[in-house]
Length: 382
Image 1 (cartoon, helix red, strand yellow):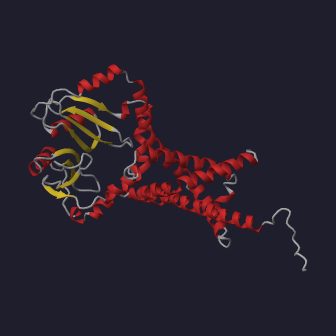
Image 2: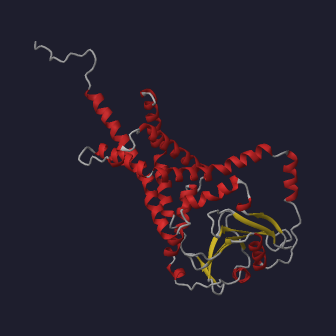
Image 3: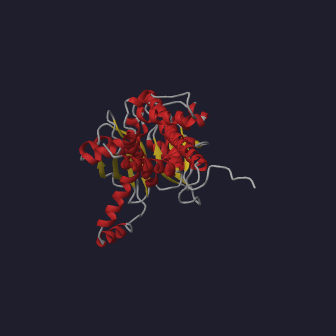
């Protein structure tokens, strides 16, 4: 059992970790709870798109790409999102001429004909996801470190509150605000413990794994490899005839049976070095990192990433996003993730309120404490 001195240090660490990260944790946790309904929110924010018919099967990818190129001949089509169980439409992200390098226009297309509907009016769901994953403009590792901070708060909270079973049903409603909030803080933290560990762990992994991987590659990459990369970047980009997108997609599905494509990404389209990648999930699996890349001019598959055939870490990484966002079990699971996802946001608020009230209490006690050496008797009258 930890000594009182250790418990005090852990309590101080728990308090200050919560105070320093409290506001950001609230923003990330609240937006994360809401963003489980990202697709539903996007559809709700664009009611005209919800009224468009769903086609099974949807229009060919070649038809969709041709519609985009005819409507936006000077723009670069970068990504095409296929219809999903919630949204009945195609979406495309295009980079228009003269637009900032980081700005993309989201275009909606009918799934039955592939015809362009026009720019999407609202991207509320996507904005919420950007807030949750990147805090809008920050690098993802910031949110990853918040996941680590949340794990620290969970670990220190478990050690500090040793009577976990007794506190499962402890709620003293008739006491002071600090006592009520403290009981709620402990009770909700205990009941949601497993979910909080899951969300914090997967969030930390997704935010920091790429940072560590890039750091490792940077440290181990030789000068010769860098030179080769620069040379490769200057390869031939002369105009070339492109293979059929639908034919390339069929080859990708053949290479990875069960591939459920969500996104089609195009690079240097129309040149001899054009690349296309198909990214999505696997039918009957949680793994979400399946990807097939091909040379769009020759039709040769250049990279096939099937997590079922990869090592442990690849499969582990493929589980992180579905487990974090809860998008694998239908509407009921999303509502469960939403309710449980609100609890760490509440813990951020309640922890801050408890700390502020405790600080005020200590200040009052300090002000009321007698000054050492001072007499408690009134001075005699002259």
